Length: 127
Image 1 (cartoon, one colour):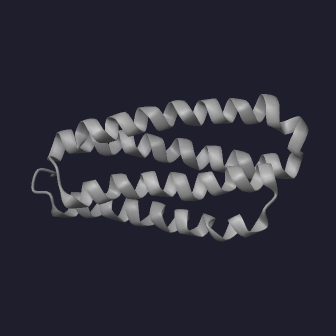
Image 2: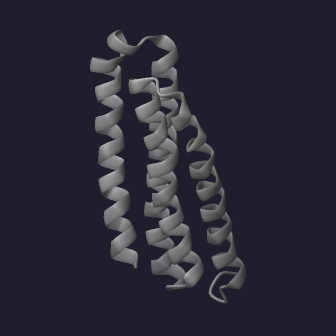
């Protein structure tokens, strides 16, 4: 599990930088200020939660594997796909119905962080 989330975190971090650069250098002149703001919000949450995956990987190394940490990692991956992905597509296409998907990603983020907290509360290795 530690290697899995380290790999996902590293891949998603690299992708967040590439997506952010694409938006800043190529998209902004084409989609306008309002849409680029939506796009940048997606990049921001994408990057933060990819770092969260790296943090989960390190935590697995410290306190060991647990169902809570496994859920935390996969919920952050799902949140990035749903939250950030929907904002990327919404900002580029203007399809407003995609905005209904974004909160599902937000819920996945929240649930992931609560699972992370649960792992600490249940661990006997954390003082």
